Length: 164
Length: 342
Picture 1 (cartoon, chains in turn purple, red):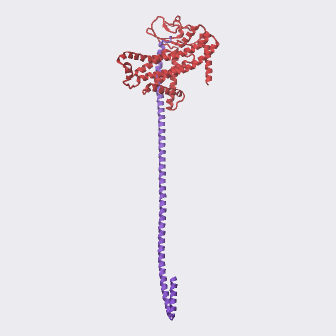
Picture 2 (cartoon, chains in turn brown, yellow):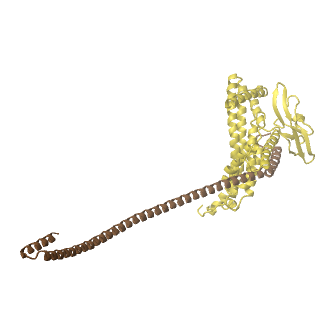
Picture 3 (cartoon, rainbow over the protein chains, first blue to last red):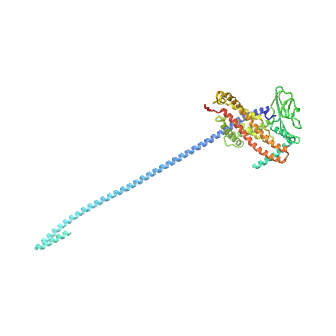
């Protein structure tokens, strides 16, 4: 048998043997195998995809949570600040009020004192007048002989009064 | 591990050297050449070893069809000398003979067709059964367990299937690759296992036989041209961008090109595998030509080394045959977006 001349027997058996193998394997081996491979590949791909989606969702949720947290913090800060402002304002108002009320009270007290003082002075004057009248009466009744003496006495009294 | 394999292969080589020794030790250099060529070529009997005058052979069926005598079956042992196991015209049997070049002939010279189960045909059956059993047991796993992680034969075949599908078919053929994947996987496994089993000492040089590579190349040729689309044929008969006068030269070249592609496929595999076998046998024969122990040891080491290279070649050639088949099919089914200036 020659090296480069193909023999009819080998051509015949090779052709039908190989074609037979090809058709048997296509039907019973490659078709189920390739289908199973594709199925597995697609299921792996789907699993990967859904894992990716879940991861994205997680990240979104986290971001949203952080956003909410940040908002809450901001709001808390604003509320605190407002409260602080309000308390400061209230304290200042209270201070102002107290000052005003105090000043009013002082003014009132001063007015009362003034009135009292005036009343007291008037009273004293009345008393002096009354006393002067009594003294005059007594002098008139007791000792009207000596004009000079009388005059000195009256002057003495008057001086005394002035000193008071 | 690697060391053990190396030692083992050395032992096997030495052992085989002892076997083949007797059959090639006698005679001059021409006998060595005929021993090598006899081993590389197809034969009507499977010769394993010779111990002194005892030939360990497997006689094979000779099947002949002729117009006048119909289908006939003989045993190849009818056509040879029972002591020397040599074929020759003098050992004719029922009007047929096998000459010393292992050719079947008819005494009266009438025409006939031979369908004998030769050594390579037996090898072919072994490879077919091996590939078929391997693939079917792998497929059984998917039938039984569904689309789960592979085990056993499936775990071995699956990477090959994925490799052929993704690296060869998809990359060379394009979007229509799915139709051709089963053919390409079968082709790859057949050539690969054929190459590997052919390397077993005593096995036949099946994938290094031109009839086998021719049939495979013709199948690729048929698949390519049956699936050829409009662009493919347009490229052959009205090559775009070529002046009309040039078409007179280009079209015959393109038509020849249709046939040179499968021809290259056929010759490449045949030459690569046959050359590997010849080199290995040549190194073995060296020891008997020089009849020296030193050269025997050196050639045994070389045989081991070449065998390792041949393992690589077996895989590369299977890959290349499949890849080029896929590329030829790809060129036939590709959807070109032809520009005018192409």
